[in-house]
Image (tube, rainbow, N blue to C red; front, side, top):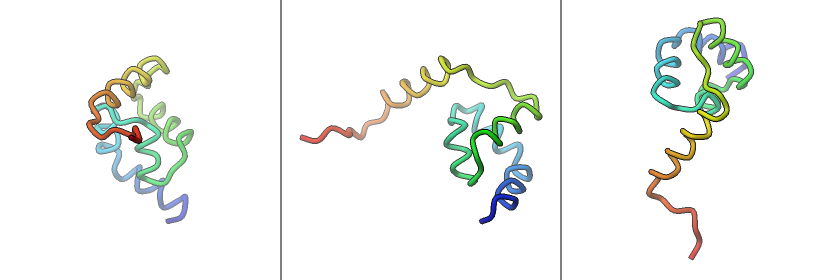
Length: 76
């Protein structure tokens, strides 16, 4: 998928994209899923008036999700 088509898909799925972010999915994860750059998606959120998480908030969510992940990455 080319970059322009990926961006159009984000714009068409605006409500879903915002909901995924509000439901605590990371901006980077959403950007990867749609094939767009993090920076472009950040700018879209700003344009749409979506409050962005601070780095501290993003890290707290990451730690929380990681703690609830039942699959260990430890090799035994």
